[in-house]
Length: 345
Image (cartoon, rainbow, N blue to C red):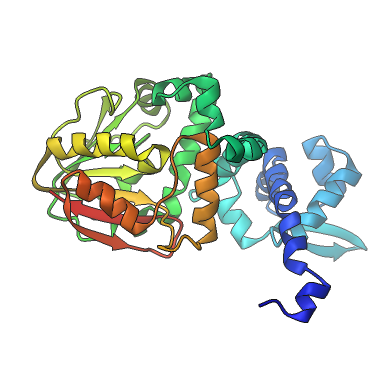
């Protein structure tokens, strides 16, 4: 029940109204290179200095910098009555492009792809149809080729897909004891970022990463790994044979597809899975009553705009797994962005 104060001044609605504006402030600061420059300078700098180095107007840059201070992305100190700006600890770790834990590429993916796609949300809700599907086709190959037409686009996308595992990959890999699984197949594993997290915990296993030919070629060219325990396999997991393995990792795969296609893929994996083996699904889970978490609810709308899938509850994933033949289903909510479900053959 709302309080009299909330009805008098609807703060929550005003905050929500500004939500996309706040996101764009962070996106713009990343795109212009503000955090990278301050890292490079290794000292605080004035708006005029930053504007000159980044080729922007002084007035526009000062306003952007002050907004970032308000968002706690930058710090400001007065020197001779002039504001001098520096990175916060969080920005230095996660928004500087060269940082080992950088989320820069994820931020740019949101800025250049998701932010643009989001304008079609109203249309997607009306039609109940992914706008990418209508424009580009229905297969993973068709959508991928349409969205990532250049090698540069693909490299940026793969960086974005990798970066999130730097902050929550270990949580999903260690959600269960997976030490019994020695041969692993990472379905749609991109460059092997999650595979590396797996092998850092279970160092006696081997991982085969199965992904589209363009992804594998790009991964080998730009994301070199000398780990002999990681192998790449070119293929479309819907149309090509899936190699035999003890464990199949499916991270951010199931949520892209309809229930029918999920069942098709899971049944195919079940047939290839060794007896006693299993499948590890990594997704952001909805509460059973679908009341939250808010991040999962937002992701589900993203799927409506960008794919033909949706986010699901633990019981919905369990039904897909059971109908595919899997059993002994365990669910672990990590408290981070992604959760884990383990099922066995």
